[in-house]
Structures are given as structure tokens and as C-alpha cells.
Amino acid sequence: MTVSAKTSTPMGHSAHKTGTLSPREQGVLWDMEEHFWTSGADNARATTASNAIMILPYPPGILQGDQIWTHLKQSSGWRSVAMAERRVTRCHDFAILTYRVSAEKADVPIYKALCASTYLNDDDTWLRISHQQTIGG
Image (cartoon, rainbow, N blue to C red; front, side, top):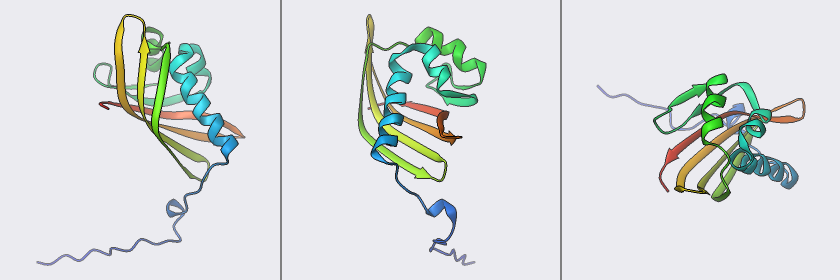
């Protein structure tokens, strides 16, 4: 049996109409992402949607809502963070930031991971709706 798949994508579909962010918008999002790492759980909570999802290396695994803040109170507040290989893509009111992170704090080995955060522009306010970390780097 032979199965044929259509290889072209419909260019009119909205998912194929990605755009860019202005340099100012990119700066705002990258600043938010850096503060997510360095400014503690309260700052991260202020810039994250209440029903957001975070996927972190096991443990803790997949967290949503208040589970996130229980974990981040124990593991946030990195002294410094370096984000390399930064990429941004936008589709309508969503922006996805991807990067390679190297973070450090006292008495903890340098943490390296590949990360992705998705933001929603809700009434001209960017809110993180998801964040994922994959150890490596």
C-alpha cells in the first residue's frame, strides 16, 4: 500500500504567518526572562499567568498554577544568568523565546539548560504562559 502525503503547507494559514517583535518589545521580553531567573519567585509570579505550565527536569517535572510557586520559592534567585543562542518568534499575540542558559548562585554548581518560554500579549501586557527547561548545554 502506498500512502501519499501532501508536502506543501497552506501559506494562508495563520500559523504560517509568523512575525517579528520590535526591538523594544524584544528588550521587554528578554528583560522579563532574565528577571524570571534572577529576581526571585515574587517577580516571576508577577509576570506569569495564574494557570501557566512549567516543565522542569525531574524532579519536580510538570507544574501548573500554585505548584510552580511552591517549587520556585526553593529554587529561584540565581546570582547571574547568561542566555546564548537567543531566538524569538511571534504569531499574533504569542511570542516564544528560546535560548541556552548558564546560571549560577552561591554553593550550587553552574546550571546549564535549553529553555523555551511562551508569552501572551494580553491587553498590552506580556505574561508568561509556559516555560520549559531541558538539562544540557
